Amino acid sequence: MHDDGDRWNARYLGRSTGDPSMPKGLGGIALRRGGRCLDVACGLGEQSLWAAQQGYEVIALDASDVAITALNGAALLAGVRDRIDTRVVDLDAGFPTEWASSCALVICQRFRDPDLYEQLVYMLEPGGVLVITVLSQVGLDGEPGPFHAAAGDLVCAFRQYDVEVLRSVELDGEATLVARRR
Ligand SMILES: C[S@@+](CC[C@H](N)C(=O)[O-])C[C@H]1O[C@@H](n2cnc3c(N)ncnc32)[C@H](O)[C@@H]1O
Image 1 (cartoon, protein in one colour):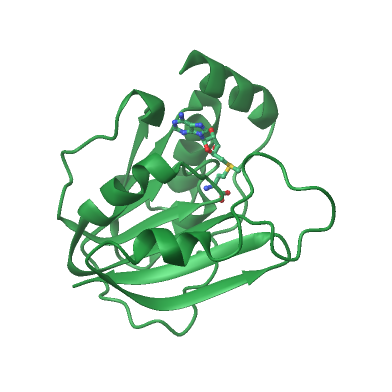
Image 2 (tube, helix red, strand yellow):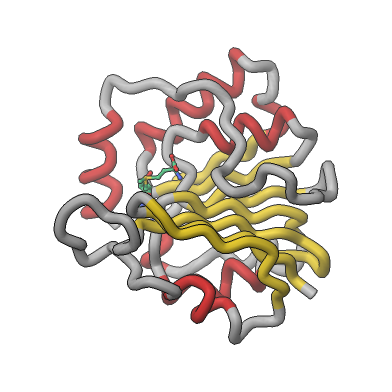
């Protein structure tokens, strides 16, 4: 953990959370408002702020305590601190299971760990929606790195789970999938 946490702490040092931001790809998707939202690898937490403002009870997880501290401050300023439960968590050490099958919305933006895909689905309540964005080789300007998913990777991976794929977009070096748990 200390590797990921320390590395990202260095990148986040001195930065603050930006404006609330709807996760990429969710526009026009019918969502159940309210209930629990899990923001996995939330970073500075712009999507967590957005979800809290939409009325979700948010759990925001990240390995970087610097990012989590920034999010705590931003949530306070935005008047939604009581709706965001922040946790410093190393997902490499295991995915917390306490919110299993209870989330109306799971957000995972720009964090790719295929070993966690099944757990992301498992966090959703029936009818809950997952929105995941990863780096992709599609439309990439330059050479792909180890974190860039191959074309079709997300759809292929999530097809094996009990979800309906609502949207899949791959362009400009990013792939986004929106899926609803049956
Ligand atoms: C590219 S940032 C994305 C942040 C945010 N989701 C966004 O879209 O703005 C990747 C995030 O993953 C977090 N991360 C990396 N490895 C992690 C791990 N093992 N456990 C938890 N979080 C991790 C980093 O701290 C960082 O905030």
